[in-house]
Image (tube, rainbow, N blue to C red; front, side):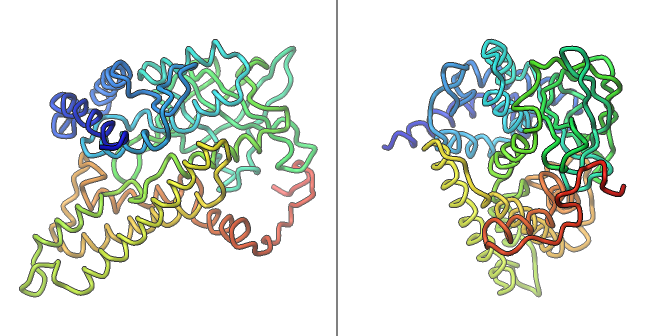
Length: 401
């Protein structure tokens, strides 16, 4: 038995022991706050059992294993529906960026330990109401204030901000240069004076995203991540991680096995749906597509293990996975007929087709809209010429608003 298979067996044994209290069925009917409390307990138990920070260095509290070990554990954990949704962004992007750029290593070590145990949660604040998908068009500004900075502005669509202790944020520090060059990146205390979080209710009924307002928020220069004016580069680093870590080949919707199971049980023209050629074709296309996306992800993890930065192929992962999830969810609802319209606001997005379909458009905006991803694929992968950009080479404060 290979090392990974031994590890998989060990992981499954741990997860089976946790499932009676923390698994999907045990959490049915819980409020968000109850789920969060269980999630914190589970994260602490996971950390104590040696499954926290699997592919992170032991120097900062990780296990020192490979990205493949992490993929193996994540694949097993996903099947049990553990309450980890509050911590995915935190451990996926902000904390790795803190590890990479923060110079205070003792501070980093303490934050990592608490994040891995679920004691602290981090959010990521990029999007703004006036910026759309153009990250470099942001207007949240920082100005020098003594030996630190003063921040004012607004962010939007910030996941789980209402429960977060810290966040990472990109701001405009110099409006007199081109829009990409005047940005600076920080981490902030979400409980600091002048920070206000307002939840937004989504079509699916939940409120996991928020508006965040900043009114003369004080930032120390030690909270800066990267160089002054280097915020766009740190942001791209964050997004490169996001498009591999914060997605899966199912686009965070139901696994293909769930569709096969449905197709076997529904009646279509007097026969099981699985016997229909259109249904079988959809299954085959999705299987091939998801296998291809998984291969891209494995290649990216292999590059990271070799000390390299993954490339723009992550845009393909994000674009195709969520689009296909939406189409497959729509087909599943067609097979269910009127039953597919029986919406359950408490259903799990990875097992319920109606919930998956209704929330898929959110996934096509978060982490880069389809249009931005298509541009990235065209320019960075296919080598096509850039779009015409009338604001190119112009100071940000000279761009008409």
